[in-house]
Length: 334
Ligand code: SF4
Ligand code: MG
Image 1: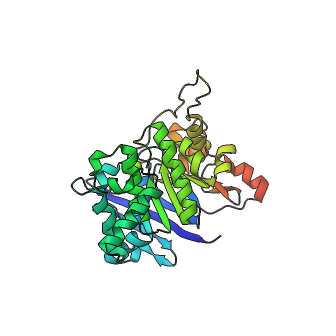
Image 2: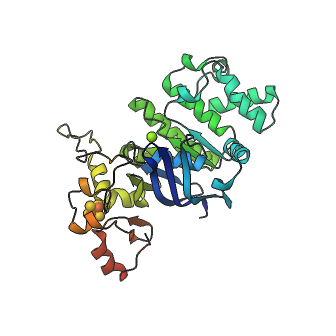
Image 3: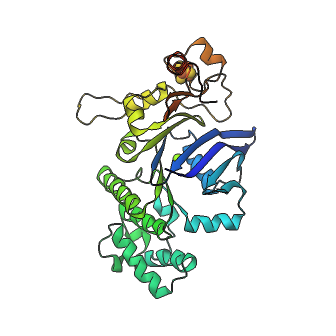
């Protein structure tokens, strides 16, 4: 299956009083048509910055300094601002964690869903209104016609997220980027939104990039998973590879911190320590200060990417011997 998006060696840096600091350190991955890619990692690992870099929505002190982001033969990093804006309204949409900040509090739901339809699809107000009602209905909002007259604060968090999803779908995007869309919601509503996204992805034949820190969400929605740590992609595999044979100690740590509801004695088992600060210099493997398996080599030399299977790779020296045995020392590159 063809890739719809391919990110190649992307570096995103922020201008700070300490100079230019990289928040994403050479990310490469692709998303196929109809696929759901989850980007997972702790808060601050660079996953949101990766998404904002792709969308051209970085804050003004952030900049992609290297690499390319190919979307259907166009490098998004070289597009003019207005071309990127039009692409965002037509082919790629994004939804965020807190729809209250993305929705405008002073306009009705109806106004906010009609606007993009009138601008990007040149519908009349009446057509846009009808289409808006259909979209609200499609995302599971009861009595959609009367919701059109309501303001965001009159809706629950779950309903607001559904409205955001409806707006995102109004342009019939080929790719939807969702940054922690369920994190602010309670568990039952979370599950409903995940189900909804799964349905919509199928019906609209979209690709989905889902950003989350929650392995439970990943299990529910992902086809492919990339794990980020301190600005680097440290593992990339299919959802079953990641859950059944995680290679990187960090990924294993994330998996062991998924709460098990069937086990009343279960205690969260987070990985000791915390993410390094953006300006912290770390030699070798960026995870070594927290890694229970760190070897001398890990402190000195940054690991290259090793392949466990043709669809599964990770950056960890522990894989070196294993891989030499399996592939005669072929490396996937750095
Ligand atoms: Fe741990 Fe070394 Fe692997 Fe890094 S390269 S994750 S320190 S074993
Ligand atoms: Mg984030």
